Length: 139
Image (cartoon, rainbow, N blue to C red):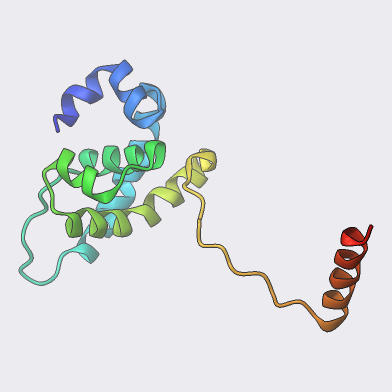
């Protein structure tokens, strides 16, 4: 994916990320600083150089946030395998969330869809529901 071309075209940037050029540059500047400060954490000793530039990682994450694209689709678009997309996504999402909160763009953060199941009903709650249920079915 030609991220540099997309970055220069405000309409395409907005369509893919939901951000105006000014917003994207503002968020990316802080994201880049955060990323560079923590980049050594992502490389093991003698690790291979990263395949994506920081701007590409940023655009990939913002596309994920905007459109909730599957990891497979992002992998196809950015010429990465699914495991690399997942790794980059997991590693960089914490940094991006921190930047979005700091810049008052927290409405862009993907909500956590893991819902906890409801606590089991107590005996009194069960009996109340059963009583109400019996009332509605009697004619």
